[in-house]
Image 1: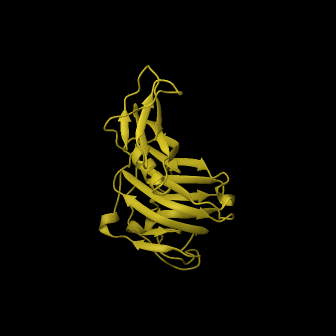
Image 2: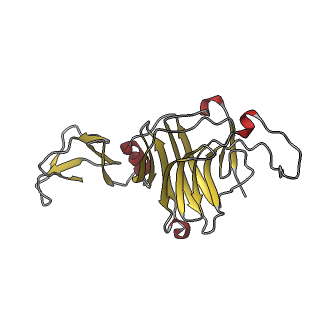
Image 3: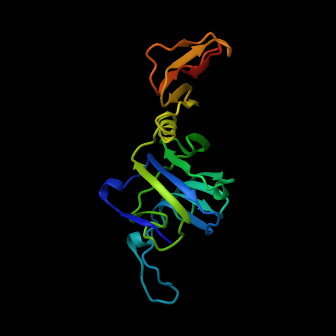
Length: 238
């Protein structure tokens, strides 16, 4: 199996708020656990400890991990694990394993909740007081942090890690940007009591009815945020 090590540079010792981001093209068959991005756990050896006399102590006993992975070939899981408790979210994989298409995943922890986005849209969230846990082990793409187990089958591209939680509009913009310079997809996301519109190109227009008349929204640039109102508004691009 192919995998890539990021080692454990100080700049990637992320804890608390975080964003993990990647494009994946999964194969139809995955192992029981298939890690897409993994920081940890701090597994000290690939040898069977029941057959070899090794004494482990300190950080070698840590089971902390931060990850996006596929579990049982049925669910995406993103979050943190301390060896006993999982803090994060799970989302059904659905047809992603058989579609042969690229899928954009982004997992965030903003200090209040874990969220998982699929193709720019929030798929699940879970309130939690625990974010990314400190891990004294390496980062890897397509395997555990040390690369010894739980390999992902398929392709992974455009991996990014942030020491903050990207907003819903930023994640939507990242996905929309992948659709090509000529795309004019308009995305509307409600988050934190605000409506955010994002698009790649064109001029944003609004109207009071779906049939118009539409007029340009003066000075509007993506991402464009408006407060929800009692009166309806319709938006399009020209």
